[in-house]
Image 1 (spheres, rainbow, N blue to C red):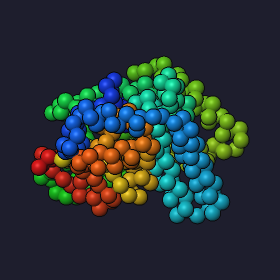
Image 2 (cartoon, one colour; image 1 turned 180 degrees about the horizontal axis):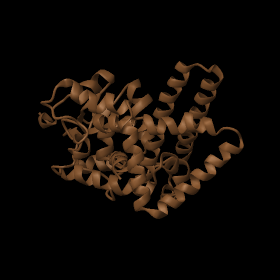
Image 3 (tube, rainbow, N blue to C red; image 1 turned 90 degrees about the vertical axis):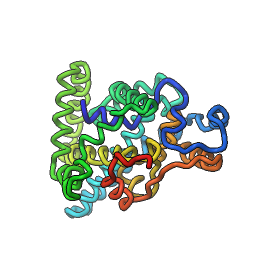
Length: 319
């Protein structure tokens, strides 16, 4: 399934502890072995922080929906839908952490998060992990087609400026990304009957519960609508900012645009590709440590940078 493979692409790590040294950074003063030993302290998992992140994201969704319903103005409702889609991306980041088995200290617990991280996004940790492992492997090996999943959604660089803008921004906002999300989900359900049965049971129970309490319309407006309309768009934009036309395979992100909408809990993608098992809440400290050791990482800081990245020629990456 294309969408779930794309989501998976930004999330897992592999069975090894560290990835390629050059997957996102330029060589610093320490050797790889020295860094591996030095960064062990950043791999401690705190289950309390994981639970707080899960509760915080869902609490934010509920609070925003209640506020929008109370104010009852179309502009506030639109803003709420955007905010909720951003929290759905953050929940995807937590699914990503579980796929890396870096969300909970109990490794098996990371395999049983579908009820609150997978099914709400029409995904599972198992399928997410499977595709994302291929992504990390391909980036580490520098496979020629490692970023084709991004390039297929971009107009050729020699095309007029408006064409790439249409394919990545305007067309998706008008429904193209949502239609692809629905189609790909349907294909995945057809190909995986067991997944289809579990997902159907989950959504029948959730929908039935909201219906019986008179809240079905709120579920549709404040969860399913942003999930189908904006979530696939933000997912694609996140992939672009992670890897498109990068100097060293991956880049880090900073700023409100990324943390609020696209990247949530996963703002240090260059660090992630080297040390995929560091928990998301320790990535910032690991990044500072790497920077102090002399490693340079590409960084994007906001929507202006994103627009520049979007219109880069990927053939010039690394120059």
